[in-house]
Picture 1: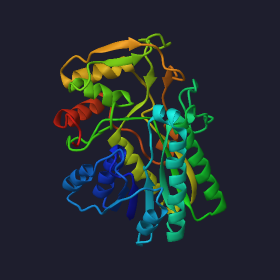
Picture 2: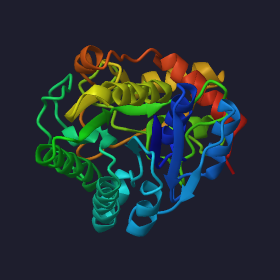
Picture 3: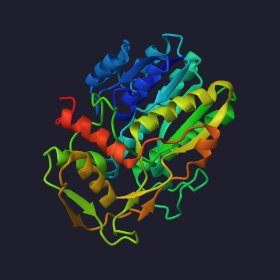
Length: 336
C-alpha cells in the first residue's frame, strides 16, 4: 500500500513510518516540524534502507495538503499531526481547537476530493477523562477534562458522522495510553521540545543530567505506594498496532475504535525504579502536591484489540526503559 503519514517526523509517527516500511509499504510523510525534526526521517531512511518522500506543510494550509493528496496512488492515511500538551491546551484552547480539529477537517476534505477513504487516527486515552472505572474499555463513557482531550473526542465524533454519511469510508481511531521507549537501535526516539510533559521522557532527561530530579505529583493516592498508576506501552508496540489497524480495514468499511495499552498499570515509583535499573544509576525524585483532575489509577482493557485486531503489546516496562535509555544516552540533547 501507499500510505501518507501526517506528523510522520514525530515520536510515534517516525516509529510507525519505520514499521510500515519494514512491512513493505510505500510511505510518504507530511509534517510542519513544529514539534519534530526531519533528522528522525533521515535516520528512519538509514534503518530501513528506503527513501521517504517528505513534504513540509501545515494542515491549516488546505492548498498544501490538497496538493499532496492529489498526487495520486495514496491508499490510506495515518493521521498523527496535532498539538498534544495538556497544560498548553488549557492555557490556549483556541490554538488547540484550530490546529487539531480544523486541521483534521482540512485533511478529510483533501482525502475526499482525492478519493482516499481509509484513515487511521491517532486518538488518546485522554478521551476517557479522569474516570475511576478501571480497566478502561472502549465502552467507557467519554469525558475529556481538558481542551487537548476534547479535540480528540470531537474529532472521533466527526469521523463517526463521516462514516455514517458515506459507507465507503473505513476509519480507525486508536486510543493510546502512555507511550514510552524507543527503537532498539537507539537511533530514533522521543525528543520533546522544551520541558517534557510526560513521565518517562522527563525521567530520561534527569538520568542524562538535563534536570536535577523528578517531581512526583502526589504521594497519597490509594495505590500500593501512594503514587499514581498508569498504563505504559512501548512505542514499537504502538507502531505495530497501526500496522494491524491498516490491515484490518482492507476488506471492511465503517468506524472502529481500539484501546492500545498493555492492560495493566505501573506506579510512578515503579517507573523510576525500572529506569534507574536500566540506566545503572539512582534517579533523584521529590514529592509535590497532586495535580487537579489526575486519576489515582488508569489502565486499559485491551481485550477488544486482541480479539478484533489480533494485536497485543509484547514489550514490558523494563524493555521500555532500557530502549528509552539507549536512545537518550546516545542522544542526550535529542536530534539536535
